[in-house]
Amino acid sequence: MVVSQTLQAPKPSRIEGIKERSNCLREPVATELLQDTTHFTQDAIQILKFHGSYQQENRDNRVRGQAKDYQMMLRTRNPGGFIPPQLYMTLEQLSEEYGNHTLRVTTRQGFQIHGILKKNLKATIAAILRNMGSTLGACGDLNRNVMAPPAPYKNRPEYQYAWEYADRIADLLTPQTGAYYEIWLDGEKVISAEEAPEVKAARQRNGNGTIFHDKEEPIYGEHYMPRKFKCSVTVPGDNSIDIYTQDLGLVVITNDQGELEGFNVLAGGGMGRTHNKEDTFARLADHIGYVEKDDIYDFVKAIVATQRDYGDRVNRRHARMKYLINDWGVETFREKVESYFGKTLAPFKPLPPFKYEDYLGWNEQGDGKLFLGISIENGRVKDEGNFQLKTALRKIIEKFALPMRLTANHN
Image (cartoon, rainbow, N blue to C red; front, side, top):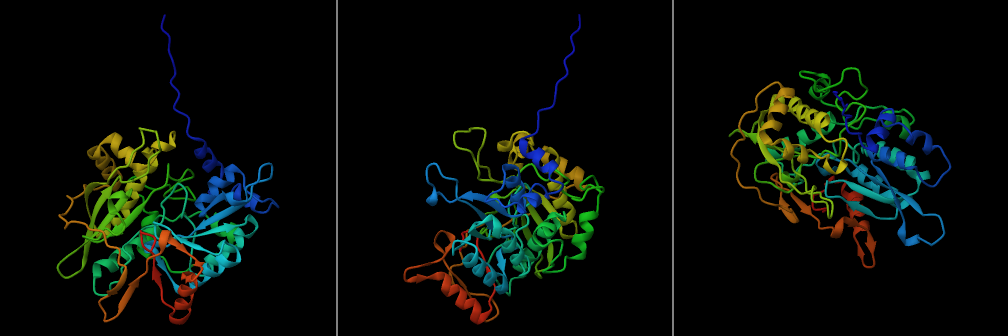
């Protein structure tokens, strides 16, 4: 007697179902936002992350037997940590009007506002959008804020390229769903800067299965990524953004005339782990290869597609790209990326040693002017006693209309 047994594929995690049912990040957020409640349901909380918000509880107000005091945290997405003066003044005002009167700088070069009530969340996000900001993709299972060195050098073209490509890769990997503007601006689309034509073209170019032609989300699809995806762009020698801890790290390579030639590529970094779970671990990124500048967008799509299609969607503790590379090995991972990319990667180019730079204090910026790096303890921008940091920053921005760049060390 022959007995046959059908093996069933492992069931995807609960979060995968929530994403699939969300109609590209619309529900249940859109419905619950209209309800007169103090908090969102667990399903809505998962989708809210993609919009840049987490639901939290004010534990200082916790009383046994009473309902929880819910509040929202909102995180901005600012590639390279760049904050225009108009946006900073808006965030400062929103933190006073709707938040807990503080701003927090994150280690991915963004701002967070804490203490927002559910009923004020829409007004807060709308104000950010109308003042050169965004929260889309600051959290959730997709590409997060793209990092770059904060030093505003005017005489170092490699730094200019790092900022430019941090912006462009952020644009390339921004969710294309209309949900964000439908929910927070009632369908009005506010554009703070025109997208580069080559980015728009690359998003629709499907060489080897990197995009979905019939999806609202051409790169992500309806399930987005298995987990968060972190990317950074830096220059040789500058490790201010911790290049070896990123899912994808790009290092600008220029010629002797300072012209951009391409990028060294690192992949598979990440410092997260779960306590007492030995199958989770920190990992430094591997050297993957070198990509010419004209191919960088297609290559980034190839990396994203590899993680999108082969990352673990069953066990979220095992879902970051570092585990995929660890399981497969670097050579197998590189071969799979090349199959999406359609080209063989060139060898990784030699680099000088990386070193950490904090850029605190006064520094020459190369055009006869100086920039100032300001230390912010624990990233908290607040007024406390005689230490009026929040007021000081507001007055500086009001008087001089200067932009700022946030650092990976929350300064």
